[in-house]
Image (cartoon, rainbow, N blue to C red; front, side, top):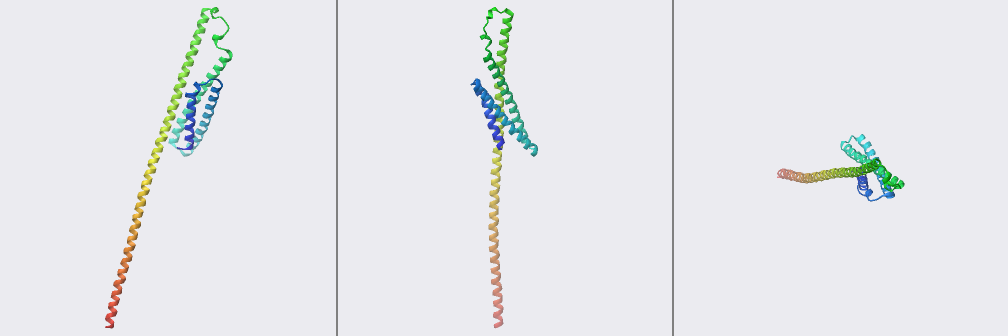
Length: 218
């Protein structure tokens, strides 16, 4: 796994944590800070993906292209989720500044029946829209988390395959070493046999010369 992929996974985990849990537990300035932090993480992740795109275009790496595609999809989803939450944050701030409709200083009973009905329908519609947005954000955050986990699983499988290849290479190197040692032993034996053969030939030649000299002197 490259350093870029490791950094990307860490950023995705941080963004997913902020979106799926933290921002629903805080309000006001704290929530704004978390959303800004998520945007910064998203920007860092986009920079990493852009670098990976350049590398993929230079090396024509299909496997890297698939990783980039998944990462870009996650970034797009995260951007959408953060943007939606920031819009909700602005609506909440505006509501706090202007006050809720039920806090207005007027007597609803003085409205005509049609106005009150429209007012109630609009409030119900707004509540339903916020509820649907909350469900959608939760589902998209969950899907982004699933995509991140799938990417981590793929990278884990790649590491396992690389480790198996390394072990196989180590075994082959071991077999080659043993074969080389055997060849070296055989070479030493052949040298010893050759030396022994030369010694035997010298002894035979010496014996023949000795016998011939003995016959001459007799």
